[in-house]
Image 1 (cartoon, helix red, strand yellow):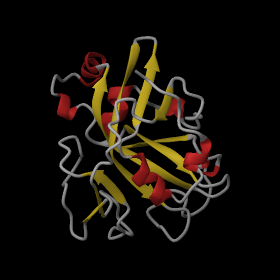
Image 2 (tube, helix red, strand yellow):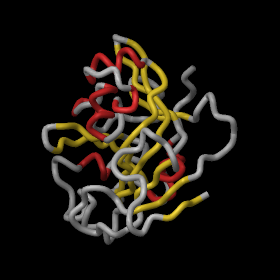
Image 3 (cartoon, helix red, strand yellow):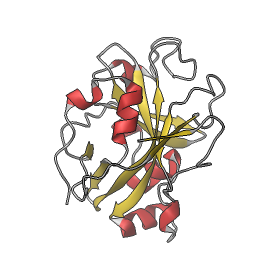
Length: 206
């Protein structure tokens, strides 16, 4: 059921636009244990300029160097001993990225359930840390090229009906600065979205 990976030009755009357009795309992860993945339902944009919540706001470090690389690569970092997965956007040297916060699990459910040690499908990948655990994403994927279409990639949804989901835009979750910027995007009424689905300042987008 998997399809070809999104090309680099998809990521070579404004991060807020990319974050919105990632909703409804499919995130795939292939290991020796099998193929699994699901439909992206929540994402947050972190901007290269005037965004103190962005990891690159104070310049390049060993930790965030992947953000300064080519668009369409992965940026994976650890917080509270859990991994978080991002897709790098904009031209090389312009550090912005999209945090993939949640997917609707669709493929390889048993494998994801084993990794997450739960049978509750709604909780398999609802939140960035759960998502990485369910898909076995870790530091080894930091800098991974998402456009090559193997191991870890994002693609158009092969089951798409062509009808765009109703999208809500709101403040990002868990940031301590620039917390009122509306850079979180999620599919309205999806039970797989993390956190609150309505926040101060949120508004629906079509």
